[in-house]
Amino acid sequence: MKRYCFKWLNIGLLVVLFGTARCHAQKEVVYRDYDRLGWAILDSLKRPGAASLFKGMSSLKRETRMLQESSPVVVKPRPAGKRKLKPEEIISQRRESVLMVFKYTRATTRPEAIIPWATAVVLAEDGVCVTNCHVLWQLIDTSARLDLRDSLLFVATEAGRVYSITSVLGYDRSGDLAFFKIDPRGDRLIPMPLGSDLPAGASVHLLAHPAGYPYTYTHGRISRTFTKEAGNPFGNRVEITADFAKGSSGGPIMDDRGNMIAMVSCLHPIFYVDQPPSDRQMGIKECIPVSSILRLMGKNGE
Image (tube, rainbow, N blue to C red; front, side, top):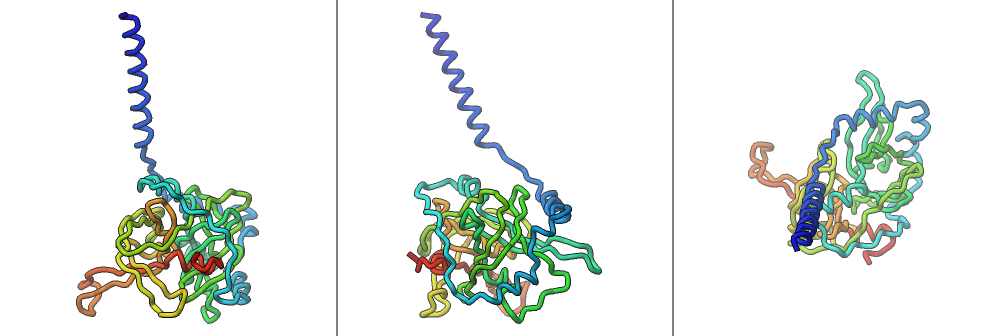
């Protein structure tokens, strides 16, 4: 009898220890050196032969002139997830679908540098991505002139993988949308699942790169839905309470299942009197609903 009790006691201890080990593993926190990541990305651009992998901004701008605005971009969206996720699960499962957009400026009177520019979202394994039209405005707007230092617009992952932007596929100014293609160089990219538009009050999650702070998560709710231009299918907008700032443009706003339901667009500060910045009261955070993204993909919001 004592022998059996001892056996079951050992099994019980193993279960407790195994459960404790799993608990500790789940609570592990990873601290990333984003400053070093920035230097690693810059170094990768300077490696021998690296220049041949990238298309310069002037070449992209010339090619983009041939595009007709609002032409559909054929992309098969990843189906929406159905299981509700914890915020930490949304972050871990969707961060590989979120890219950092950088601008590389060549050395002139100032040293060469990479500038954190914006955020983009992977839509297809072959490298189709989406961001805001204003992120690529220098390539899209024929009247925009490139600075002498402007050299490259490219994207990078949190793991430090760098990909060239090979072409702009389509855009709509009123919808503040732009699709572009990157060269995945044989890597398997993970697309972001697309969900549906949500009403005011719904919970939302945002993962973006505000002002050079990569992969920053914020949480909030949809505060308002409205249209900026009645009759314009790309005129609908969503406002949220989750914080974002410059650099977040193009960032994905997700539902509780980790599906992209909107995309960051711009922020409108409100001042008590017209004397910024001392009298700032709040900021209206304007976003593009996923139905507009689907429409430009030829899905007509379905």
